[in-house]
Image (cartoon, rainbow, N blue to C red; front, side):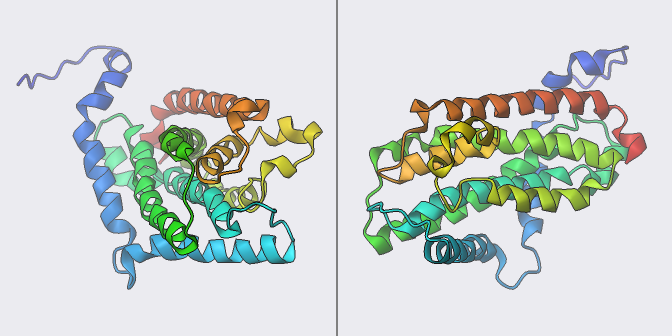
Length: 275
């Protein structure tokens, strides 16, 4: 194995994306560390990944279904409809929260060792997938409790897993870069998550939004993701692929990913000094 260190102007910039692969072992280490630390010294441990979405589902079912009377005439139980939207949203909120503070949380590592800093927020988003898959158990239990058989479209769900990752990665990457320079964002991010919950179709269908405002509503990247999840799980849910708001949502997601990577790379060289 070649252990030579070559010092050359601009070499880091030219080999940045190759370095992501070279430092893949660090990615595994950081991801596994985050998984172990997340529920360390908690009484219930990983059960929190089940309890939180379960309680949220119960509250949403009561508030939107019973009080707000948003329960549809669908043959599918309303709890399953709600959870189909809650599942990707919980992943998004967890990934955004964890990734946005990931650089500040790894100050010692950043100031002492060189590696592509992009590894840190990416590992935070990937770690959130662990909670996502654990929460998926609740959905399977709901299928059994209600005797519900999901449609064949459920096999298309991995496509929307990728969309959920990109929708979380873009904003999370940009916010973590901003958080290094402006620590005010650690107070803003919880508000963004809370506000985003109510402007995303978690407890209701996006079809309830007036037609003339559909394009504006679709500017929320989670709209396309949640509509996709719901289509995969709920039998009579509309196919988002047949409606233009979905493609607006996808376009916004891809734009945010590009913008985040561009801004992150531009600010990355100053992280060690600012942090």
